[in-house]
Image (cartoon, rainbow, N blue to C red; front, side, top):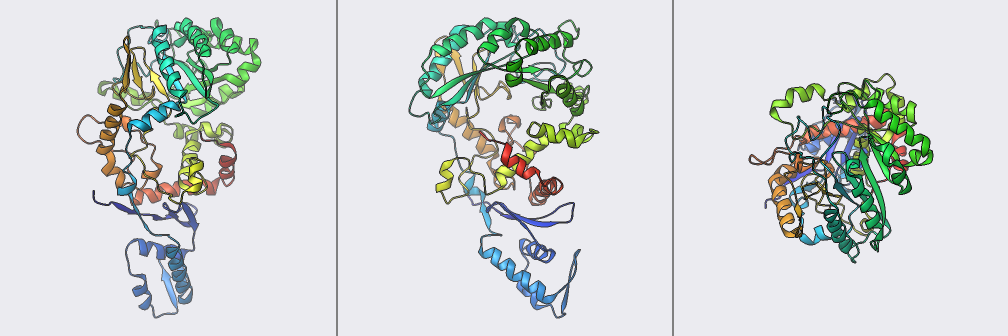
Length: 512
């Protein structure tokens, strides 16, 4: 394979007219003098700076856009440029070598042995008919909903399979929680499976892990089952989009609003189990054209003293005949936030729950030389280990999702055509070699684009959200040199405007 290289250093100018250059290989940002910035641009453009300096006869030099500077000062910054070059700046990154990592059967087995969460789609049935439902009219990448319920033998087989694997020496995550999650449809419609699962899972011997339970619910049955969930210390994620007006898309099958019923159940839970409610109850709010970030924040903050997670509508898997109506419903989170009258307060209080802060955090941790993925990096000199193309999670590195139809998925957010295995009456069909081959085949289709992309080492693009049906996929997040410079500029501009945010991210954000 031919070596593909890109320049490691990008000159960046912020809105405040401050000039930097950022070196991707060294993961360092340098605030620089206008003359140094000008010389760095010349070098990156391949111009002969020494030859240019020899042509200078006047004692002053005009630097475009910055003014006039003494020739001796220009020579000083040229020597500084050479010093930085000797220190490793302005080198090339051989992305053709870095982006050659492949998935192996052994790596999948090890990842699954260190699983963080298994989630069961207990049913595809729901009492609601939400306008924007991920299994509704807008989308075409899910299995037909047939009011199925998952039975206990399915759950039992999966738990026993995982229990055998996570109890092996491959598990290096001793004493870390293993979350058992319940999803739907509406999982509380199959509540007796939750009871059986909890009781059975607790009887199994988990050598390395402690068990935790989590459920995502529409809240309509909270009043019936809240005591059991409080007793077993569940994390409960309640889907609610704000007040009655904001929640107008969440309706019963007959079109009647669900807000008052859900609110009554939430208030009953808060009253009966106040400490549990404070510590273990969370809210997911979907953003759309009937609410806003500001309305959602104010509602949950004032009514429940909670900071909700605000979710945008999924823009992948949209049916062509529904696209126009979908985009009339869709609202961009950042635009909605910036249109808030009380933007600064919301940003400060919501913090890591906001997409803007999540993006800033991702940039910090992927672009700074103070962050390490694990302890092993303290003992290695190589700062550029091999990576997978794209930002796709390795299989089962986040969770394993089992659908009501027995499909084994990497997570619930991707189209159900991307199953990785099956749970059948005869057992679990999970071929690690076949999964590895499939991932590597997908990676091979995107690798060439990734190798010439300036954001390859900070990528968050999941390959499952790209069109893999018709030839080679085209990544919408591809960054050339000019776009990458603007990308870095946006984040540096953010820190210039919010100088305390860097320390806050370092102190408060924990990456697991």
